Image (cartoon, rainbow, N blue to C red):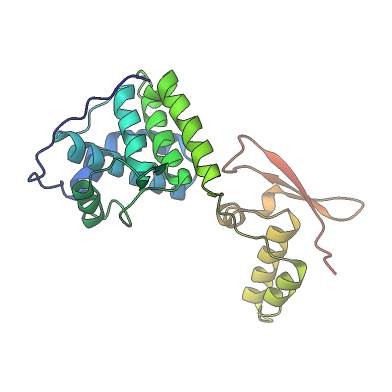
Length: 245
């Protein structure tokens, strides 16, 4: 891997206001809006782009400009990934910049990131370069190899993806018992049955569900055609039987 020349930054330069960082990333975020199906996804992209702008300003004392060279992305990765050394756990983000990013509410706490956060940030940067038809620094061999090594390091250090446990049938019935006898209770029971019996839907998918996409089967049960899904393009058919006794 090529050596990365560190750029000396005047730490007396204040980190820009987060509102202005959001404006800097607005053009790229608006382009992503057209491709994103979820408001949550759009918000997460905006957050990632604001962080990139803040980190770049603090690291190099200049506004973020695209395309970024691969060396800058490598610097970003080593700034945020913890590694074990003879002196203990280390990462390269300067303490002053780390505190400034936290003070600007661009970072929740000082210290290195979990791998999932880093992966999201660099994925958003890659998406922005793709949408603007720019040379993508994530395509470079050195960046790809570093990300692979970061994943292996995180795994060796015991870092695992955080996943929410699915509810059981017993927990579902406990939720159903809280639904009232009126129309609101009937609606809530239908939503709970729908989410559970179709294998666990995201909140946005349940909220967007309509009867127009539901078809009853002659043998019993239903088929629902899912128009939009976070991880799938096009339509997906979901078979469900509401009898969960």
